[in-house]
Image 1: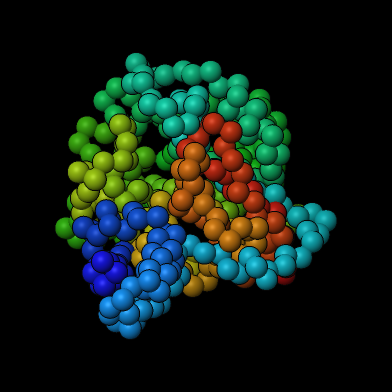
Image 2: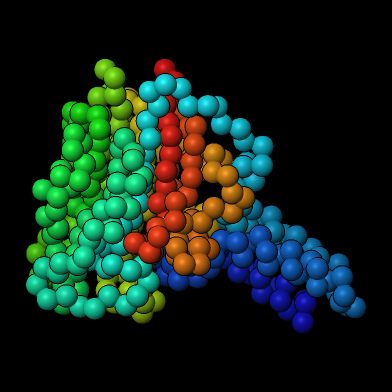
Length: 361
């Protein structure tokens, strides 16, 4: 049994290394929890110890698959030796969170009943949770409702946001909303249109009442932080599989979804590369460490993950977190002093990300 299992896993690891992020039809296999790339080869090696035959071949295959899966397993080994410097006076606190359709669902994980018209849910708990984060900058995703027809509905909660967060500037684009204690001096959504491959199809479904929901998945805001301008990118990249209600369904795997993911990452990468300002990027990337599509991010971005005090950080699903799909990145000129994964307390299926950063130059 060990030999066939080792051969099967090695085949999967080879295919994953070659295909992940490159072909659209590999998006279902790459949904495997990243930890499997570290755990399965180790389990196979342990099983070899009690196997009587083909031990060397099985060991070799398990070791090769472990090497091929290096980096895909989601292990945050850098947390074992990383020591963040204390935050200086004037450091910036940031909270990034996928809100799970804003306040439409009062309890993460339960089936969302189809609303009629523009739904209204009890939202006091939602806003209590947000206020409790007490961040200087909020990068929030899924500022959206869904109707009976599973099409997105614009949320208009700006009046309440301003009441709940007095003194904050507010910016929106698509289904992203950014709140800032610092003045917002520039804002714009990044449209995926120029980055779509020919023949990939339009991500806007027929009959859409809100095309911008489908075409803008990053909101850039430039903030005046003590006389210096810093860019904050609020990002929500498309899911590998269409996740509109009733939820993820592998039968809705398609090329258009894959091409939209790539186009949105390319739009983000191009803007960051052309941006001379120090930049902070965070949000729901819908991509685990095992997904090769993350190769599209520019080298200028550095994962803030080493500052997380966890050897296996995970942000989704909040009930049984096995995947890290919410990320935070910085460019040169920004230091990360704290990075914590914050449970959603039943408000979302995603954990939040709380960081404390500062400008270094």
